[in-house]
Amino acid sequence: MNILDRYIIKKFLTTFVFVVVILVSIVLIITYSERNESFIKNEVSTMEILGYFLTYAPYIANLIAPLTVFIAAVFVTSKLAGHTEIIAMLAGGVSFPRLMRPYLIGSVAIAIVSFLFTGWVIPNANKSRIAFEQQYFANKKFSYNERDVHFKVSPTSYVYLASYNSFKDEGHRFTLEEIQDKKVLYKFTSKQIKWDTTERAWKAIDWHLREFKEFSEDYVYGKTRDTLLHLNMTPDDFGNNKSLEQTLTINELNDYIANLELKGADNIPIYQIEKYVRYMSPFSMLVLTFIGLIVSSRKTRGGVGFQIAMGFLIAFIFIILFIASKSMAETGSTDPLLAVWMPNIIFSGVAMVLYKIVPK
Image 1 (cartoon, rainbow, N blue to C red):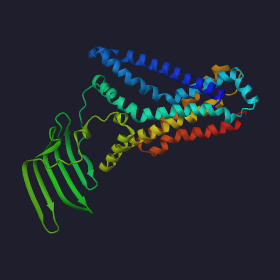
Image 2 (tube, rainbow, N blue to C red; image 1 turned 90 degrees about the vertical axis):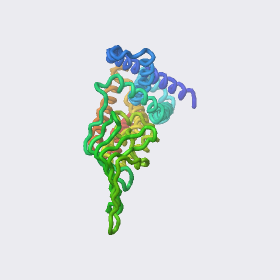
Image 3 (cartoon, rainbow, N blue to C red; image 1 turned 60 degrees about the vertical axis):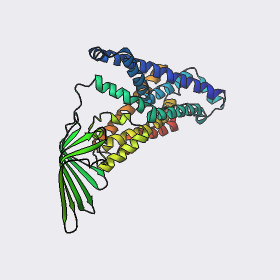
Image 4 (cartoon, one colour; image 1 turned 30 degrees about the horizontal axis):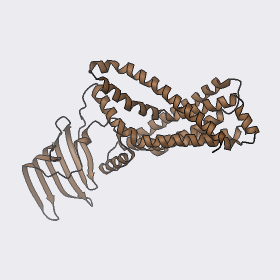
């Protein structure tokens, strides 16, 4: 790494940090002004508010990281071009690919830090942030209101619940069936099941068990039975899952998706999209840095302001494309992996076209 690399990397990273601090500060001020009434109404202490914003700030910073990386690349490069420094570098024998190297080093460093934060640090911080928002900003206390719930608790076990009371952690008209090779081995039903917090098991009330054999059937029943201890179902499955995907680390997200697939849930795409976005976002920083360098490397009559405005326009198009493709994935009309990566694929093609026409 020579003087040129250190010079550009220093400018690039310091500009990135400056833009992040400015934008995050603006967002925090707006958020505080919007939610100040809720803080006063709920008598939230100063320390709780401070703790909330300390977890909210890194979430916002990482959320806008691709945009801020792009703005930093455009700003630094346009300043260099405006001072004819890029022309001097190219005239001195520095090739355009060589000029890209410090930008690549800087964006890779930011992308790695962003991936670590997105994968593990921010999800853990989001656990307290989202709990805080649900406690103080929710319009009403969460209540599970789904009816006639069906899901799998193992590859061969199926559960049915007519209703569930999330305040009492109890279900009504419960059925558990074990099916192997298209044959029902047994069917367990009960009028009610209750969660025992001490034993961390379900208690069945007014239960009936039918075991089907080849030419016979065994039938037993009772009032109360602690028979569902190893059932792969807890009250968390009926809890408030709003923004749950944001609170899971990558490892937890993988395990949760596998568990949902086992249960045959229909909201799997939400968690798959969250997983794919965490891998896509760092890569988008590299693509946007590349485009930012290309579009702002020429000295124009419009000056730095024109190039920054054009940079914002490109970033806006990228965000709109990402939101649109993500919405299509959430509705199930597009494969989640393809939808999440679609903006990067399109803008990578745009970057290649721009690279071919940029003066070198």
